[in-house]
Length: 334
Image 1: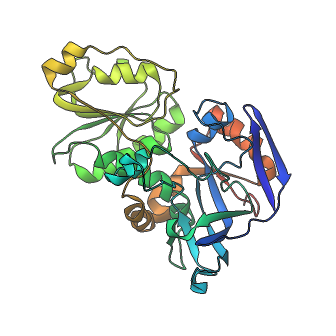
Image 2: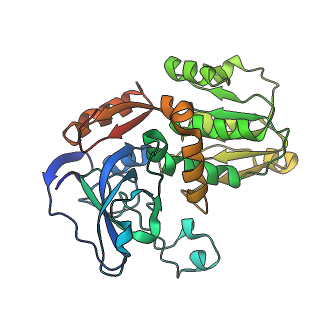
């Protein structure tokens, strides 16, 4: 099979690799589409605390089951599936207390073990979710990021009249904003520097602004979510939380980044600061919601398609901010 391989920080190529063979409990999936995520870029840049190289990236994907392990029901063959890429150990203290996304021996497809930027990928069948025959291509591709967004919302204290301020109108920022809009009758405000992304946010009905300077300096929100991972956005957002409100670090920041925060303000205003890591009890809900929303609602979030041989070009497009979700299609870019 052909696969994208990150050979080390800053080094990427397409190689011919042996086809994966399913082990006990595994299925092999012929990948129809895999998304590029900020995590893939951090992996390419050597910014994640994992020594995984060489590795095939790709943890957001769907495809067709083409082989099964000896102890897997053959009925899995030809099913269209999306896959939760996270592989917790189920034995460490965090797993045993029901926080598998915080597993002390964290493993994930496309992050610590070979993923789906390839023609074929081997996955545990327990992580595969069957999709309907008339599957929405966009919904299937976006199930994993939507599951992350749903977990992010799960982590927030919520009240029906809460107002949301979201930093970033990339794929994740728009998903968080769509979920927030489903939770409240209040308008969602989005801060986004990129004019094209700002226009898309407005097309969804959100109030989108180019910079925090355009916001009333006295305005405060019950819930502020950063989906950028940028220090400047996080520091600005923390200052815009209403007393008794919540701030969430949702975007993936550089592990070496630090922020300035007033502990007195957190104390005085009883501000809740919360993180959100990956997926936790949200993949099944995301699979259903992605198919319900389908191409009509999620279609605008997938803006580019590239073949495996064009992965470097896809990365450049991602870095350039000219699109949103970028799909890698092993069968071709169309």
